[in-house]
Amino acid sequence: MAGIEILGGLGKLSEPVTALVHRIFGSAEKALEPWHLERMASAKVKADRITALGEVETKAATERALRRLAMEATADQLNLEAVVERALPNVSADADTGAVSEAWLRTFVDNAKLATDEAAQELWAQVLAGEANSPGAFGKRALTILASLEQRDAEVFEALISCSIGDEGALPIVFDVGDEVYAAAGITFDNLLDLEQLGLLTFDGLTGFNLQNQPPQVVIKYFSHHALLSLRSLEEGNSRVLEAGSVVLTRPGKELARIASPRQLTGFMDYILKKWEVYGHEASRQM
Image 1 (cartoon, one colour):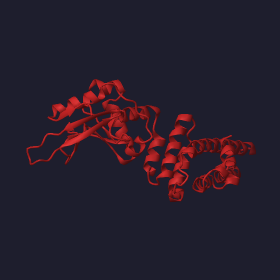
Image 2 (cartoon, helix red, strand yellow):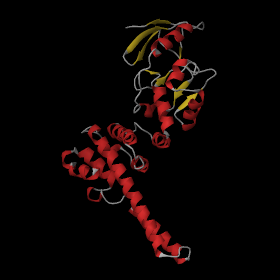
Image 3 (cartoon, helix red, strand yellow):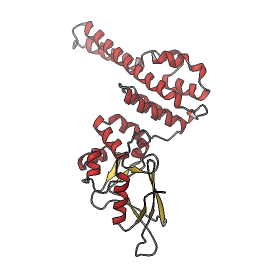
């Protein structure tokens, strides 16, 4: 059982990591107790009141309700333990885990306990390790959005990050969502609107977005591919802009991009360089 393995290994963990485990589970001695004892007690009080009012005819209904709550609490606990166990190897021994706020941990626990499959548990484990190593790396809004993602939304988001340049997928480049390169990746106008509604990005399919006040040359990085882009000067002075397409990530979007698993899209680098050449920039495809 995951919880037993976590507890048994506490002595091998650094003090900050051990402290984080204690904060998540309350205390080492109680880590395997049902996570929602308080919830169960409250439910019993409510059930007793219902019984007293004559709305439940037999005590058996109350007992069934409590058993159901116990099963739910146990499942939640096991899910949470699986997430924590996956996260611990990636938490730095000198991480400042004390700087992780109680409010953040409560939000994390409330959502991570519902991760029932290994893929979801791995995502939540990455979030926990990332926050432990760098408190503030993931805001509570990012946690809420991650918990609300359907599988289809997650796949589209990863496809979008696959269309990003730079490090950690922070700058997706979507020039014309109707182009084949995006359609082949599964990105459409409608599902970009869905991601915008979730709070992951801002989408402007009409005018798009520009990066202002750029230097004369910028390095474009896409996975292992690098290119040097010489930007044209605008007529108004010597200022330069780089056309960034129709999508920008929100802060939660940028945070969750760090745990995405993008894949390199064949021909994408050539596609975006050709687009920039149409805007009047000059591209050197290899560095």
